[in-house]
Length: 163
Image (cartoon, rainbow, N blue to C red; front, side, top):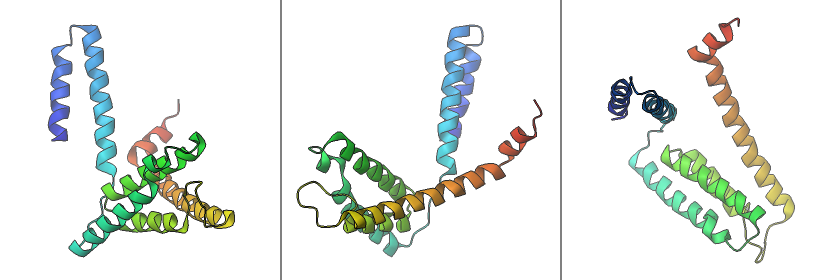
């Protein structure tokens, strides 16, 4: 489907070759869609068994209840940012069938990495440990992404350019 849309955007660009402003708009549309399409194609989607899919669904639901941004709507703005980040991370992990990541997020949430100001049960030390663990995982993911980029043909071509 994405390839078909790219072809349509190319044809649209050709259609407006004589009209410079419309051509530029069509060119920008094609470039933006191509970037989005490539990003989506590069995402690794894990293959899961039926049992793992059920487990993923259960853990995802439990985690969303614990970190849904609406639950933190009455908290100060600084506190609202972390649940939003974790919720986005959780949704990304769910979309790629990353059971390990969803399990990790759920475990951290159960440890109390997030909680409203109404009755914190965990100490600040426990919260910091959970935050450090979560950030270490993010660093590991980013390191892997950097390695992948550095090994890509495009990166190698760009590095080889003298000027």
